[in-house]
Length: 275
Image (cartoon, rainbow, N blue to C red; front, side, top):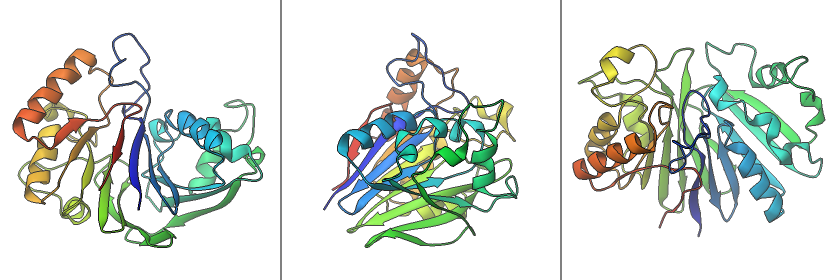
């Protein structure tokens, strides 16, 4: 039984390729979960380009792609996802119905590829086999025995959190979300309860957070508080602020590990096998 999580993009807001963002990475949000049944992908930030190259080398024939929401840092990599142009590939797209995207995911992905934004239209992606806009709370089973649960997150224009269960293991993908100090989010707690791996929006620190209220993001300290309260086994600090250079991230990771030894900072290319 396989349950492997790989981080292809861990940065928030905007990609930041620079000498100061080498260790932790500068690509925006994209992860994959691989089971023996098939591949799940979450978000299509700039990191999804590398995922596409990886799937091409593997000769994969299908994947399910779930979006948390459609802000730029979560969709801008989609036109560079190579397998979607392969007519022999089957890409199934899933996105929650959100107040910020009333026309649905196909309209959003198509609009960003219209002239003059991009020279190739969405119609060229002949590997797209299906797309759906689902009601938050829907439970999916993209492959036999692989269950994906959903819940609403606090974010401008809305966002959807995910919990993936397979073979007695579970991982939660919680980005982008803003917490209310002292009031743990019941939706988030429902998704992370007892998971083997919690991936959580930790864009800011608690010290930075008061100046960022309303921006739709959380902190690594809140992630640790939630992880401890909900019996999480490991915590991946995720959606790093572009202003947080490698030196800043190293301090955050050291402080997080000192606070709770199950915490670590996600990095581009990092792979975590659950067992």
